[in-house]
Amino acid sequence: MPFRIANLRPVIHEAFETWALFSPFDFTETSIERIAQLRIGFYRWQHLNCPISFDGPDGVLAHAFYPPSGKLHFNADRIWAMDPERLMNTRESYDLQSVAVHEIGHLLGMGHSTVPEAIMYPSLDPQTRKVELHGDDIAGINAMYPS
Ligand SMILES: [Zn+2]
Ligand SMILES: [Zn+2]
Image 1: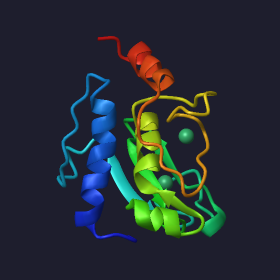
Image 2 (image 1 turned 180 degrees about the vertical axis):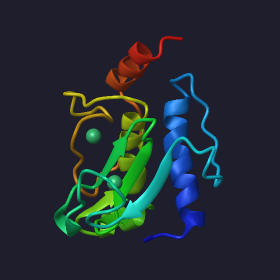
Image 3 (image 1 turned 90 degrees about the vertical axis):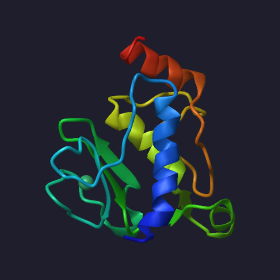
Image 4 (image 1 turned 30 degrees about the vertical axis):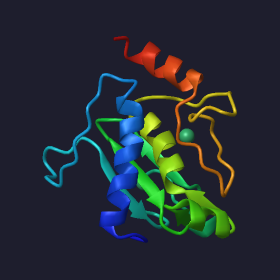
């Protein structure tokens, strides 16, 4: 894994909180395998039994499958940034939290949006941070899980 777990934890936590605010879900971290419903990790190329290979440094950034699969995998061969300074100064780097928020949307069952400003828009430019839900994302999650 390209990061220390202690540095990764708050970034992933924030990404989950972003969706928790607008959905009926509470997310709790656990390392107990048998109770975990979502699993997150960094992988390279063909990994586990995923249908999609990450294909090295030019492959997709990440993918996620909603439960019962419940997997969120990041491509360990991409350049990830967890702080704004590294993001700004590293060419072709991607903001981990931004990608995590998008992929967690998929974990919750969200599909892609056609609104470029939305978190669920299918692509993200490098060296760009987008971590706040857009009205389109909020409408989508509310439609899926009415309160
Ligand atoms: Zn995978
Ligand atoms: Zn996506």
